[in-house]
Image (cartoon, rainbow, N blue to C red; front, top):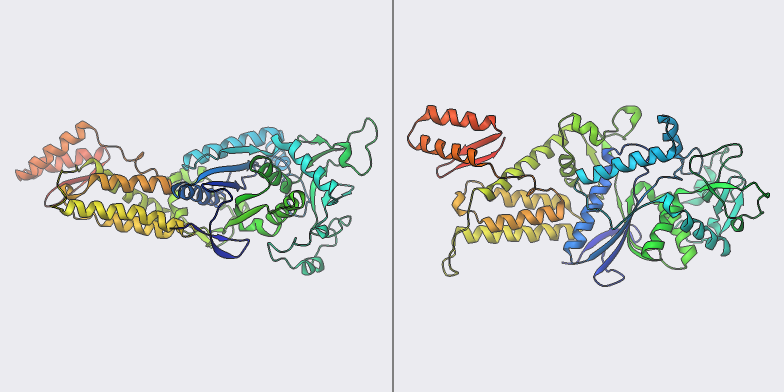
Length: 490
């Protein structure tokens, strides 16, 4: 089945065709590392991890770049206000460098807890200052920049297709522009490539502006200090590592009208070619039907979830229950449902420790073979669901149905290899880690189960109940059927 993705660039469900056969170049907008990520932030990275897993399962070699924004992201998209890293530093009484390092490490730890695949290139904006300045230089040489008292700006009037990607109504924006906005900008939507440090201010993160980028040379002995704009870093890192044109660019839908629109403008103005062929955007995740806001006390982080008894993989399951293009709604009831679903899946995974395959020839197909075929088919169907625009809800439904098909079957009739094949596929495609998190019980527990079964066969109910209680105290539940005693994680 061909991979189909909803492409913001065309507004359609497009069949994916890479630039180079068998290889995919992918850029993911990473976090601004000035605070803990919320569940809304993490939802994007789970979806893009699913994209990478689907690409790999579809036979592609993926080369992905993801940035860590550790400078230049101002609190306003209009290039106004203070840098979020400087704001974080002021909040915590640390340097911007210390804040960036702390929250970058927290993000990396969160990626590991959520089972996210590491990108081939995880890069920091502060490590690419030279490349960002080189990009400004190219744009200046091509006539796309102008200078104001507070920085070097991109002149969007020189890029006629500026409004096309987000279908912007620039005249309406101009009419609604605030009076106090920067009146030195030629158009209200022009954006800063490089901001100058304000006179009399010393920033933790600032670099000398090369003289050739300035319209007037600096006064001797008085360098003009500055820092990159948020939009500039993504273009510089993507193009310097992956080349002028990439296959896929991902991010949140809030990036469409400003950040990604600006990325396209500066990248294509510099290179003269298309920046990305496919743009994928995840929709918002709401909290109890409303916005995520720290002022409302609902900016839940992984730490908050842990305090309430939820694991990162519970959150991952919750996120996968919605498709990335649809608006999600986080509630603790919904998260609890996801936690229960994951626990149920783990108990199905535990069946592999309780059954064994039997040899049989092709002329005597039995229930074992039928189960094997159905489990194998489910593994393929999950992959096909994800190839249809990352349809994770459909993938989860297929897995639920496949597991439900094992209900009420004697353990001896379950094809162990087929079950393991499905579990491997689920883990590879969805990152749920069923195999890693469902260990076999130890020999002592197995001995107690055998003793309990013998007690039941002998109708020694007192001994049976005592052994059941002993097993439950060690976290093992059990269910008796006509043929078996099936254990699960309590």
